[in-house]
Image (cartoon, rainbow, N blue to C red):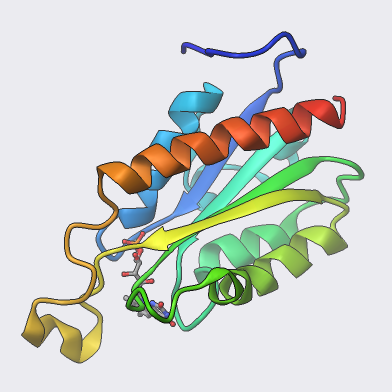
Length: 173
Ligand SMILES: Cc1cc2nc3c(=O)[nH]c(=O)nc-3n(C[C@H](O)[C@H](O)[C@H](O)COP(=O)(O)O)c2cc1C
């Protein structure tokens, strides 16, 4: 896959995503993966040991009850110690825009982040954007954030991926 890259040594990257509600987070995963030239897998499609092959791992999930989905949290718990590996997080949330500031995104990432840090991952950054939400009673009103993620969200996700590649590359492989 094309890597519009820099002269840093190519980082071997992989994206793991849990996304089931409207596949919102999967769209973000694919935008990030396109920039990094990385495969996209679900938590069920990887074995914990396999991740040792990668310099940079992106973990993404829809936000469910203010945290990442169970299967991806369970994957983090099952990982071996990975001293110095780089990771980043990304998510889509269903809350309306006025609620969703940086602090809100970081709160949703906190449990996953902690689990990875315990396993020795160095966190390079985090990204969050709105995703269509028809959970529970919202379905009767057409849901929240209809049409999200949109083109602009995908563009922002691509820019985030370039930033992650630069930051991780600057830390050396
Ligand atoms: C069971 C469930 C729980 C959810 N809990 C939250 C929540 O706590 N906060 C929030 O902002 N959005 C919440 N949402 C909305 C999702 O985060 C949002 O729709 C997201 O884009 C779904 O991602 P996905 O399509 O990749 O699964 C919830 C959705 C579902 C289905």
